[in-house]
Image (cartoon, rainbow, N blue to C red; front, side, top):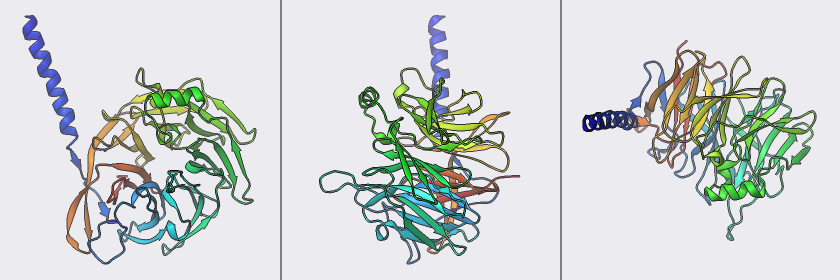
Length: 403
């Protein structure tokens, strides 16, 4: 009898794992409007970005324009580029090497000022001695035709890059985290005045713990910041902590509750993405174990909603016009997955997005599959969800959310 039970249990477990493995190879194309925009395939003489310089790290949708900031391989320079949803193609780009030489990545998310100007932060390349230079804060203006103008606003934290940032609701102040030290800074857009704080810089003890897990700053510094309805700026710090910064008092508070974690993996916590619901709740994605959670800013409580897929990382979150939260989870060495979440039905896993890409040179169309997805953004009206890839050849994938 015991032998039969073991055999039955083995069959059940094998069947379950087979299902999970098959999910890795499930491709999804929505029934409604969906398409891929070619950005980096050098198959024509038309506007394209070169290989190894087009991985999307910053992404925002403003009206018909998708604005993306890229990361390049070490020693190469990134781009800011604009794609049109209606035209279904990239319409302009700016090589950052021509504006601010020596940069490798437009690492932070974009945020928007009062006049529509976009702001982002960079991380520099290493010099011949292996030392990384200073990153810069940049202002990006995109006109109605998609033309790009970039202004260098300098380095808020001397000698450091910019890992994450956000703007306040008024669009007057930028809040950010430096790289690799992890200093918190504020930047007044009108005056250009900046202030730097050491309060959330990892302690020596924390850094020893991070090194024990072979973690580098890009794995433990807060990848995203968000403002709540009361103007507090939230992010992650230390060993799985959540903090908020009070701009009026210039003070930091560490919440009693921490990021969700699997036992023994405290050191792996990092907020990779935030999204704010209509009722003011903050939805966050934790890198360490790829968990989705809700933070209630009023009570400080954290609710773990679980793992969409059996992989680490949860790199992008955005709400659609249907009220669902969309996200991208997982990544190398596995395939990333698109998912949605709503309170009534929980998670829905779509699989790997596979959208048809039609462009000059590939008029017949090809099915482009997104295996390594870096960021996700929604249009202001929630109609479109845009996915950016993190590959040597990266494209944009767009689908319309059902009403």
